[in-house]
Amino acid sequence: MIIWRLFPLAIVLFALLRFVVPLKIGKWWKVAMGGLVLAMPLQRLLISFFYRGLAPSETPAWAILLQGIFLSAVVLLAALVILRDIALVVLWACRKKIAWFHASSARLALGMFGAALLLSCYGAWQAARVPSIRHVEITIPNLPPELDGLAIVQLTDLHATKLFDEKWMQAVVERTNELNPDLVLLTGDIVDGSPRARQGDVAPLAELRAKLGVFGAPGNHDNFSGQSGWIGIFKEMGIAILINEHVEFTIGGSKLVLAGLADRSYLWRGGPPPDLAAALEGTPKGAPIILMAHQPGGASENAEAGVSLQLSGHTHGGQVMGLKMIVKAANDGYVSGLYDVDGMKLYVCNGAGLWTGLPVRLGVPSEIAHLVLRTPKVAE
Image 1 (cartoon, rainbow, N blue to C red):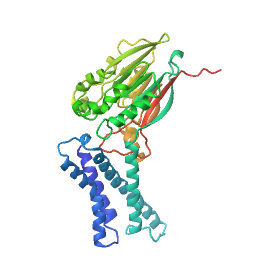
Image 2 (tube, one colour):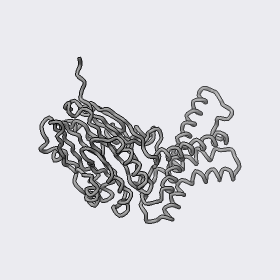
Image 3 (tube, rainbow, N blue to C red):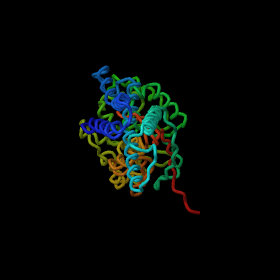
């Protein structure tokens, strides 16, 4: 949390020193430009003042988007300044000059600032929109022919808040039901907030329909939001939350196992730790196992235990292209899409929503994952 608070301050100071200070413009123009850069931390303070006592998820949608736009704009501006400085060093080394390309150029500064702001507005729109469908076929080595074509819709990181509210959730449910899936699986971070604050926003999830049922597993934000209070509510809505347990299906004479793990966030908020042995205890030998685990880390251990397919979220796909490597490093190398992990398939979904602390997506679209399971093709 301390790093998260210091990061914006460091970015702002860098932008002021390397972007605003070198500009050869009038004093009041420079003050105005500096004020725009400083607007990012100031608007966060103003929002905190007028909505003090509220968690970030409880601030109005416009405020959530505004702070996301300002934060990402300053981060993007800092990135552009770094690229500019690298280019200036290269030009200096090559003994070349471009008349308008220098640190004190107001023309260049205006273009950089405008580009950062436009990209941030686009990123906020990308984050807040209703996600599109992503169709993926996954070949499972031990999938019986009777289960070929089994359709799963994975919804992850819905993060129900004032931003991802009842109207948004209803649209996600409608898109999901149009796919007529066999299973709907919610792989964590369904809510941000207490049942009292969020029950109305998640209410449309009760309308989810799937031939074999709707199931879920907890994420870290569910744990932070009072997981124990939510489990009974989801059960009443027809959503069974699996925490270190499994259910079995018989389809055309073949068995299918669906298991769910507790999230690793128990370390911070209590609750049961993830226990794969308990989740898989008593599963029929040789049956394909689908595991819902919110965080993709630990996939190799799950593969070793005999899991056929792991479905995860948590990473938001990295959210911004340049952040993917950082997110990847924090999640055992898994950030977005389909992976083969020691013979087990792992699908990491970009997520339908995201955490409101940074409501921006650039180059990493939100998604409703439509996963179709396939048996291996036999060579003729």
